[in-house]
Image 1 (cartoon, rainbow, N blue to C red):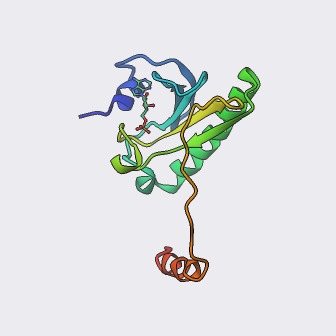
Image 2 (image 1 turned 30 degrees about the horizontal axis):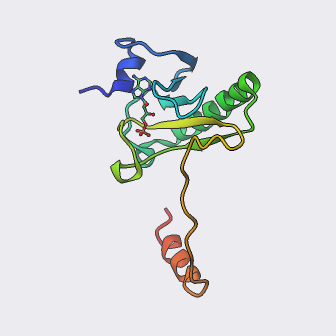
Image 3 (image 1 turned 135 degrees about the vertical axis):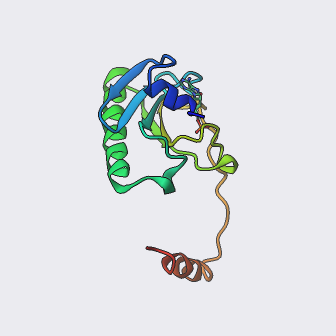
Length: 136
Ligand code: AMP
């Protein structure tokens, strides 16, 4: 069954569209974390980041930057978050790749970010080496 975002791409359900090209589409989030919260999606339905072919990765990055510039020019926020969830454990609810652009104003409390933890400087290089070994 097509994802809710594929149904927006096909025109089956409406969205407040901001930008569109061959590979990507941007529209307003229906339950915004802040004024201007916009989603950028790829038109083809890939579940998450690891599924994207390189041309779609590049197209998504370009559209995110383009839409973020337009949001900054339109709303003049103090900053913005670019957020992207992969997997239910990470908070993903729509399994069609998408990037959130969330305008931020000083002290707006629009997002709860992580609590900084502690690391063991002695073990970080070993962990980095393990990850390096899996780069393709
Ligand atoms: P995530 O939790 O990263 O999967 O985010 C999914 C986002 O999609 C949420 O912020 C929802 O508010 C948003 N959303 C779901 N359905 C729609 C829709 N029909 N139009 C616009 N945004 C939607």
